[in-house]
Image 1: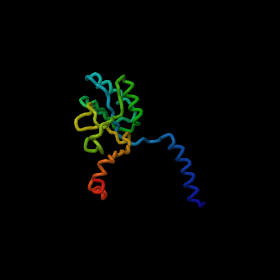
Image 2: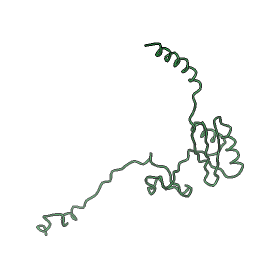
Image 3: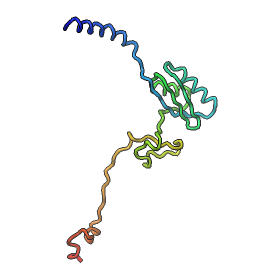
Image 4: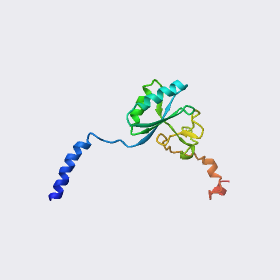
Length: 152
């Protein structure tokens, strides 16, 4: 280990102790579904979420019951703060209709979904094996059976 390696090692030691306390969160957007009925509900949720540290903007669409929070925040903390207002809140469960891989399956259809959205079910859908039942009598007299004439 030369002088350059030693200096690099020492600078990492000194720098890492300083960086341990200042972990910077990444800028992200958190979308929530929050049950809001009136302007008061909307204002209460907006004020609560705006008070979180790292929040840059809070946008609310009451018609879709959708709250979008942008900033240097953790999704679980935002969800917990939204629930602390006394409103029913969950992570936004919908995706645009065009992005859904299978929008017609029963799990994706939701009457409460906003127009143009379906429930995101990619992680919950399991592939099931389909057992095909073949009737032995229909195969006996099919054109694919070379011995069909001998049976008749």
